[in-house]
Each structure stands twice: as structure tokens, then as C-alpha cells.
Amino acid sequence: MLKILLVENNDVDAHLTQDILAEWSLEQFDVMHVTRLSEAFIQLARTRFDAILLDLSLPDGYGLLTLKQIQATCPTIPIIVLSGLSDQSLAVEAVQTGAQDYLVKGQGQPELLARAIRYAIERKRAEERLTHLAQYDQLTGLVNRTLFRDRLIHAMARSKRLQQPMGLLLLDLDRFKSVNDTLGHDAGDQLLKAVADRLRECVREVDTVARMGGDEFTIILEALSHEDDITTVAQRITKSLTEPFPLGGQRVSIGVSIGITVYPLDDHEIDDLLRHADTAMYRAKQQGGNSFQYHLPNHASSTLSSKPS
Image 1 (cartoon, rainbow, N blue to C red):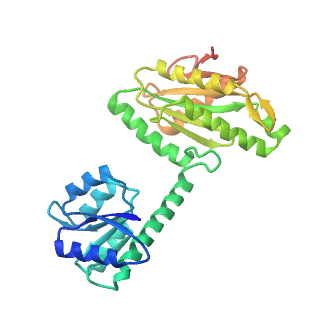
Image 2: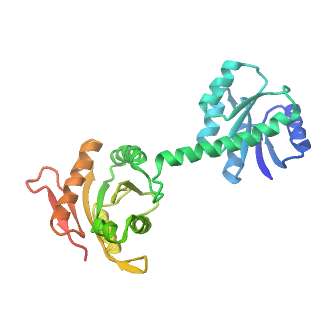
């Protein structure tokens, strides 16, 4: 059964819509009817809906702004606009704004509405799959390079606004190439997935773990009370990745080299921050790996190193 939120101010139109969906034999619909935008927000906070049928003329909302407000509140739920206006330009704008469909009340066969709901749900699912493919690494499920840069931009803005330090960590696995060479690429892929799982366990939900490609990962640490929190996470990661990985009947040991820079102490643009973290990471690797180093702005010595305890 599909759960539908009907946001409709006109009782006659609302009853007609409910009757149409009740008569459709190929699908069962559980329709909840509200008459105001404010009531819709309350229900959306309480209940998971499969689709929203939205009238653009409400006592507390009108036009495409109504659509934008609903979409901002629940971006993953498909929205079908039900309008009394046969306006092609408005219909196009509604779809461009985020609606999956635009239907004129009283026009078309009764089954049109039921089919529109089903198609809208499937289109939204396809859209989400494409978004996931574009923003997440397909092997590990981690954020990919594209989404990582977007999140870093927003994290930097929040860091300055809230006056909280933000840690940027760049990680490169030690001895990963030897695993690929001796056990094969399938084993290497399994190792990368296991590494991704351990990295997730080392950070909070508010933090971002990304795979940049190959055996290189990045982490954004936000909402920190003190810069020492970054050191704690780096120590946790190095300790976790030092533990052997069960792989193909063997126990494989690797390590990780981590470069760290702290924003806004290191007050530069994204590419500079990444370069600074990268330089610190290579210094850690040159000194034997399985350690982390900080980039220190405005110091003769550009990095501070530490081995896991």
C-alpha cells in the first residue's frame, strides 16, 4: 500500500481525488488529507509518505514557493502538483523546480492520477540512484571526490561562522601495492572495503569520510571543541588500520600515513588545503609510515609528526 499525503484546500477536489484513488484496483492508496502547508509539515515530520499530491493554492502558501518549501523539507519524496490552472509554462517551471509531474484537476481519465503517482515514485527512485552514482564511490560506498569537495566548502564556511576548528586528513595506505601484487586486485578491492568500514567506525556521523581514488582517502572532522580532538581521531585511525585484516584465508597487515591540516589556522582555499595535507602525508610516509603529521602554517618546519601509541 502506498501512503500519500494530499495537501488540498478545496474539500470537493480533495474528496474527488480520494475517490479516484479508492476506485483504482491495481494499487492500494492510503491517503492522508490536510488543508494547509503548516499541517503538511507536521505530518511529514511524523510519518513517512511515498508521495505528495500538492495544490499550489493554499491558505498559507501560494504558487511555486509552496512547492519549494515542501521540497526543502522532504527532498527525497516525489511531489505531484495538482492545479486548477492549465498553464503550460507553470507546469514546466514546476517540474524544473523539482515536481515529478503537473496535473490539471478534472482533466484526463481517472487512472491518470494513479499512474502518475506510480511513475513519479519510480522516477524519483531512478533520480536518487543516479545521484548516488554521481556522488559516492561504487566500491566502498564512501563519498567520492566530487561530493567531498562540496562538503569541504560547506564545512569551511561553518568552521569560520561558528569559530570552531575543522580538521582535514589525507590518508594513504602503507604496503597496499604489495597486497595487490601478491594477492591480486580482487583481494585489494576487499581490503579497500574493509578499510572503509574501519574508517567509518573511527569517526562520528557528522564527519565525512571520502575515497579520492586508489588507496587514498580523506576525512573532514567538524564541530570540534579543540584541535586535540583531531590528534585523538588520527591515533584511533592508525591503531585501527594497524590491526591485521582477514583476507582470503590470510591475515594481512598494512598501515596508514596521514597528513593533517587545520582550518582556519591554515586559512587557504580548498586546493591549497589539500596540497598542505598531501605534503604532510608524504612526510609521514617518508619517515616510515603508520604515522600522522600536521601541516603547521608560518613555521620553518612545516609539519609535526606523531606515531600511534
